[in-house]
Image 1 (cartoon, rainbow, N blue to C red):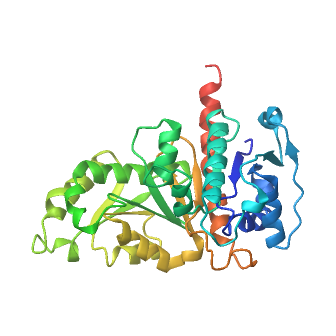
Image 2: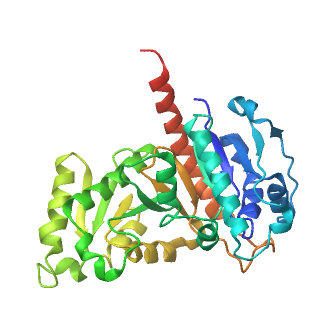
Image 3: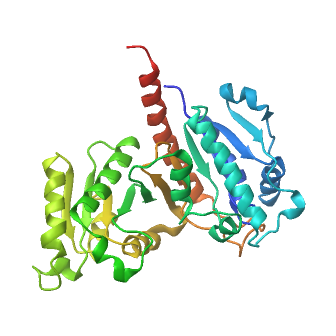
Length: 340
């Protein structure tokens, strides 16, 4: 099968993104796994290589040749003056280049010139200063792509995925936003993403909301009235779904490899567990969007930016997962385009 074509965006230039990508490109097997297009200002890629103390030859191509690039190539952008790059500082210029490079990568993906997008860490404060008028980059990407279906951030650690029924809302609002349809959507998102990543008939565990899974209604009826019916509805569609499991034990099952994904009820229920299990390997996937998009789950790490201290592990995990997803995406697209 033809290997996938990936666009890589540097992320916020004030952080560790350019350094991470330079290190990724030198990692064993990376350039053999995919054709890679670096989308961004040439001086940002050179900055990353210098920070990582590595050599990087940019094969810069004119945009009209991007459709048939192979190996490692570079699409030049002019989004930020070198003098405006301020290491370890939140700047509107950094947010602007993040958004413009991401936009270009999404344009290429919509035009089927690439099969997936990997981006270095963004800084939400910088993007907001640059005019980001969305809750986060995931909603920004959905709007840019004109996608109105269900989508949500997915967190990945090695072979484990987590999705959540509610996300960036206050804890006191969580219960009001949990219903059977929402739980089923989160299960479907985990199932579809795992399938696209090559996992056949994944086992998905649903976490409870209340202590001890409600203890037969003693600590709340959400498990009885909402979660158990949702699990049964998913099972009726021949999905391997179990639960609701007490949230203080379900991640023990996950750690032992007994499940492929955990559906949690709120943001920190899954985030605390998965980051404790492996913060430096975590990956974030833009789940549900029509294009495979992934990034390391950590932030811009201003405290170590420019010091050649950035750990590339999460970026490599994001790349490997994106390769699998983009391979499936490419095969599906080519199958749809072929004459029947």
